[in-house]
Image (tube, rainbow over all chains, first blue to last red; front, side, top):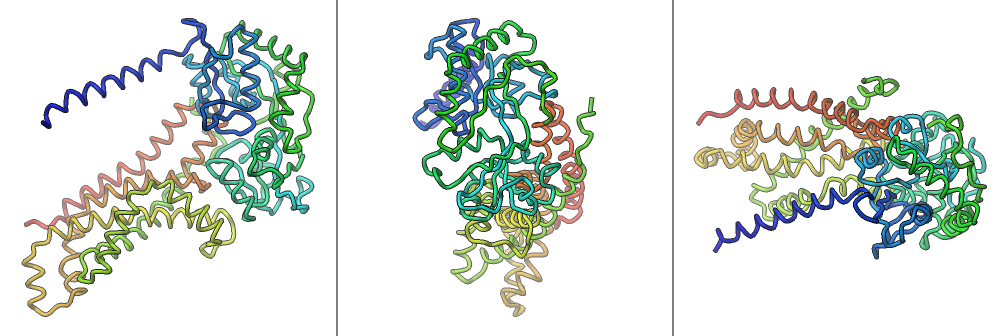
Length: 280
Length: 221
């Protein structure tokens, strides 16, 4: 009996391999009416894949609106996970058509990809326990216990500039930080306010945390497109301007960040010149 | 081409990797030897514990163990291992987790070495009147260690690479610096290559040296 199983297993392996390559070549939009958009899958409020396979968050709302303006029906949008470290590669290889994934515009990245937008101005901020009144200004952070995600820009800002005397705990994800914040081993979680607001707005955290409201840095989120694709870039810019004008932008901000007490800001100037790029 | 390295303490990060490796190696050699002794001991409870420990711990992903040391031991139970700052606490927790994990593999390597010692040696030692600890400590383990230098070198190399998991709880070692650089520099492949080369520099000489030691030390039978 045993030897006969080998061809079956080999066929299964071969089919898996074929299926994998088939997925790999299904990227670009030119072969059909599909559009592939890179988003975060793990940031509540910004870009999240829900357990039932749907997607939600501010980036997702922006991506859907832009794709709609580019002429794609909602069912033609294929969302693909774009982890921070993979974003440039995904665009360069053409695996995604554009990326809406809390993608801060900076000079290093601009050498690799082009950015449409910016569509959002985020600030590095802190999330503290709702009952904790000891942190009211950025100066209060020194000597306290902060938490952020391993290697992130926010974590590096804390280490190098904002609060060098603060203790910094780095974890693989913000959920671990929030566990520590909840049970008191950590005093404040720090990253972009949009991301913090998204976490604080989750049902099981509602009312437990508040945003500090410190504008520790400026992060302009852009939509990444392949380097040199100026046509797509200007189409996306047009779509973004329309989104702001017909107040879909404002609705998306309120729906995704509102419950956390996030003070919404006016949208940034879309298609702003390169000189406005913040550091980091 | 390599100007992205400027402003980063790559050597310092690898030094933390080396420290993690050394402390964990020493700890897991001690605890692994104790586990191996338990697994061959005449006391059923100790044998049972040794077997249970090895089978449970080596089948848990290392990431889970390391994150548990931080979220479970430190944050929830308040175990800070006598340290006051996150930097020291995380380092010690990571070493603890790595020891707990690696010693299961050390134990199994050592037990295979114990099995290479001919039964006649143990019987002769018993006939001379040596007790269990004496048989193990004077006769069996010295020969067992000499025959498992090769397998233990494998474990050490695996341990060196496993230290990268400590980045998950914020120990500032090589993998954490790599993530920072990838975040800042948008040079994914070059940065990865630099760190891969760094690990080769650590592990290749280890492998070559211990391979030589294992040929020298092996008991010829």
